[in-house]
Amino acid sequence: MRFSALLPVIALPLLTVCQVMAQDSGAYGLIPGDAAVVVRLQAPDQTIEDLAEFVDKVQPGAGAVVRVQAASIGMAISNRTLAGVDRKTGT
Image (spheres, rainbow, N blue to C red):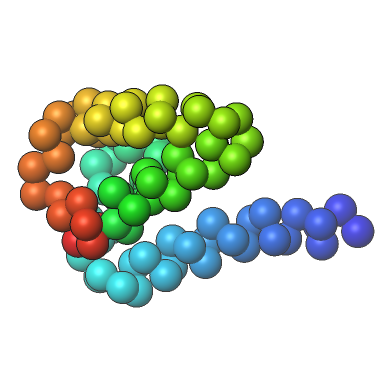
């Protein structure tokens, strides 16, 4: 019974990785060997706005903090200016 409960937890990340690799066969080679986590944001501007709206529903007024702090995404990924990132479509 325990294994069946863990199956979705194990299968979901595997299916996600397979899906990303199927979309772009060269994607896996772009991930540095020392990467601990890989996060892909499609349309970063829209994702940030959606997150800010969600946060505003939970804590009114806190969405503004999310919008301001969104600029630090570039610092977190060592690409301060987000050079080469199309923030509108995520490509």
